[in-house]
Length: 444
Image 1 (tube, rainbow, N blue to C red):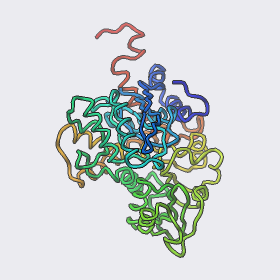
Image 2 (image 1 turned 60 degrees about the vertical axis):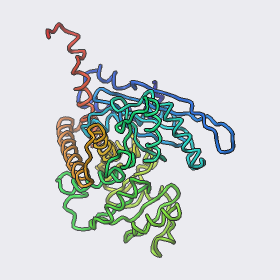
Image 3 (image 1 turned 90 degrees about the vertical axis):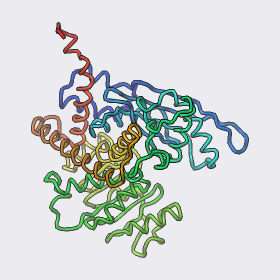
Image 4 (image 1 turned 45 degrees about the vertical axis):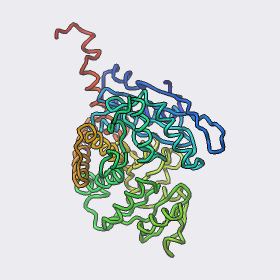
């Protein structure tokens, strides 16, 4: 598909072109990885409780499978469209590659407002969508997982529809993020937040972070977004003791306290009332907007909600010393360049939030083998994987900064992450022969 200049996919592809400049890949690789392998648009008719029929638009995009079956979530949200899903499938391709998983990238979803649907309407929609995409998914082809406004129950419905469409068999590896009782993995629920926490702890232990390493005081943190990932990263940092979480936010408002908010209380209030109310959390807590939270003078800013919250328009007001992207694409390419020029490190989403897809990989492995791991083993494997890929990324970053110092602007950690991922994707593409092979006479 063609990406317009102002599309999410167009912005996402800028990282690919920058990485290609840094590591000089074969132009043929760039051509192949710039386009999705397969895009499916389905009409999903659902009979509502009122008796009326409404048709929803559903999507599934498989970007690249050169490194393995495609992998990526399903989101139900009004913003879902082909451009958004394509950009997210592209991101997943690079996320799986930077985490060195044997997967390509995929993404899907339905354009709808789940909050306006009853539980029975939601089930009908999910099952109908599952039937619609059954032709494109499969344990060795494309493996969905939860995303925005989808959960383990939704994954169970879609798995059942896939099983029914394939002779009534049982294929637990077709979906990840399922309930443990349906073949899901222990440790999947908090994997994205836990992976980000393990990454920050690894940065503490390394010599590559002036913000997290060797500090004589507690590290201040603001977390934008209080869904699954936002709640868990906030909770892990709060319980750690070395961090002060001064602000958290949901889609409506943020709550702030200079001495730190009680994250346990925030979670309790959010789960009980559906929103963060400063008055219910503490007398010293005050309300602010999401926009104000992004400009707080903190050591670490963790955007963990939606795409494009730090842009060229507001990046000058960002005062954090380190940005950890737990959300997908919260910092635009132009904003990332400006932060890099100011010496602000942005830990890119394709590594910072890779904990979810890493544990999804573990779930897939368990489903394919029929052997299940205890939660402690899942956590241990996740921590080891995050550490390995972080240090591999740092080595690539140091190499690129040494090679390109003073050329074309600062090399950011995002640049290095995409270069690392692209080099792995290119290796897989060229394993069957690239232009260098076919352009000259070679013997087997």
